[in-house]
Image (cartoon, rainbow, N blue to C red; front, side):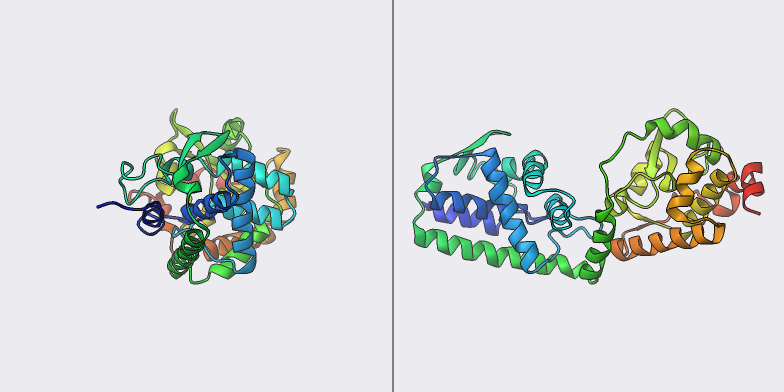
Length: 332
């Protein structure tokens, strides 16, 4: 059976495996280029059109753009940063070009899981530089493009609706994310904190309580993708395996109690970072604990039931951290 170019484009839109809405955004961007009869679209223009598609979508009726309740998509984050004034329009478009296309551009021309049906049918890729558009895309009529755009908008809306089912408090959670995005900064290299943190943690893994070895990771107890900072009060050392098991999930209440105690260990010293914790959390143990729990409650609202309580072998009551002299002295 012979299929038209319109059939193939509909197949991509309707029968793709959509963990997020990236494919809808790129489909809309390609049709915009087709209307203007461009033989190729440079990376900067592709980034601009893609950014504007999401900016329009998330400004008029913000809805979740993926099914995973634990995070924002790259495009949601970039648009939020722009809306909050953290980056300029040019900076936002540059970020799109650098980070948002690595998966969707190579995988767009796929129906279901089959890449052979429409492989290179609508464009060829010069990654990071341009897309070369083919006659199969440029030959679509204005009526066909109108029809396809309606299909895209309908499919995009269906995806958002499905994703929002997993995020019943989406708007509230999104408002909380905005609070942290306002004060966010780019990720730092954290490995130089290992010697400092090790002493106040008793050279044990924060999550399993066992002695640290060569596979030492610096982890954000409250996931960085929510809090958007690398402040010392939220950093701990963990085995690589424990860090991977935790990923960016919400941790159990017992780890918050432990984090409060660890921070008080630092406050009981004369280390310069003592002042940083005091500035971030408060001047008294009670205020610091209250502030940290406030952040924990916010993260709860964002992550919902995306939860990790620790490794099966971990028992807080047997954790050697609490029996060490520095913890006993600083948490009496």
